[in-house]
Amino acid sequence: MLERYGHGGDLRTAEETFGFPARQFIDFSSNMNPFGPPDGVRRALVHYAEQIDRYPDPAVRGLRTKLAQLHRVDEQSILIGNGAAELIDLVVRALRPAVTALAYPCFTEYGDAVMKTGGSITPIMLSADNDFVLNSSMIDSEADFYMIGSPNNPTGQLVDPALIMKLLYNGATVVVDEAFMDFVPEEESYTLLREAASHERLFVIRSMTKFYAVPGIRLGYMVGAPHKISELRRLQVPWSVNSLAQEIGEAVLEEKEYASRTMNWLLEERPWLIGKLEALGFRVIPGKVNYLLVRLPDIPGLTAAGLQHEMGRMGILIRDASHFIGLDESYCRFAVKLRHQNEWLLEALDRSLSKFREAATR
Image (cartoon, rainbow, N blue to C red; front, top):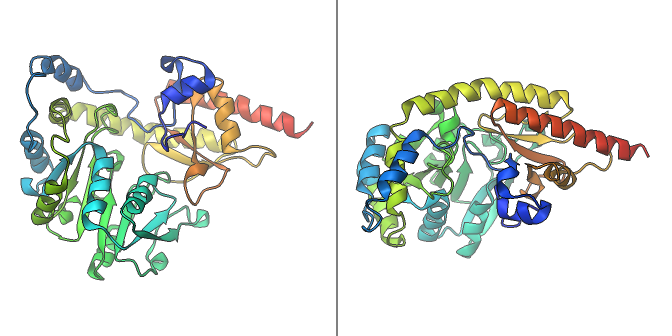
């Protein structure tokens, strides 16, 4: 399976499995901006050659200042990390919740972080009948700690901020993973980033690698009350954020035209791709971001693993979503890419489905 290490985008495993060099794959299994890194990243790389012999700023002050200005929060409420994954692990390790509520399906690293600290998990099972939307009627738990993805991975669904504020009002601590929030046109209506800057039991985590297509540079940040962020910073590994990541982080925040172009593309391409997938017989979960969770057409013998293998033989990688708790072998996840790439995806899907239909009639 391609998800050997629990993630999409594993081109090394794809090479070993299908025998193509990495550059020949079209990767729909990871959810990066298909425009690739903005021009500022390339300029930062050239400039970085002149300072690679220097230590990075241990306090990441330049990037923290820019993020504070962007989000209109206190610099002391921001902690920069080696990707969102480090910050997920760090906040759980620091707070060590006894019982954590997770709404499944969700990002697997939430549960991994909890188990590493010896905590237990109370599951909230989201329903396909409700398009995997989390609502207040599902919150019936003794947990006092919640980890919530908004937009959720793999469903793409947003969580009503009022629900999270209700959890806080009732005394819970909540970590909201907003790694894909940059792709949401209505971001200001859903983000809780500014609320987190002044609430001691709310933490919001953001990624900088997905929207700006720099996953090889591990970079993310967390917002919380300043005294809580200070406690987390003391537990963070020294030199967690290298100087190249810091420079790239500062550079991409200046890329306003790139951000605008990305949002315009997604507003057009996402509904177009949904329509085409539905025409092929897929049921598409109506999320809000740059990836689509889909239920496979009802074809005897068709599974997510089987479709992934057939597509991989054609050089196209998709995510087998059955590895997410709460989903079965009938679910896959596709990234939304540029039109010509999406057309290749659709053509390969059509050919693959035809093979499964033919096999079912023999």
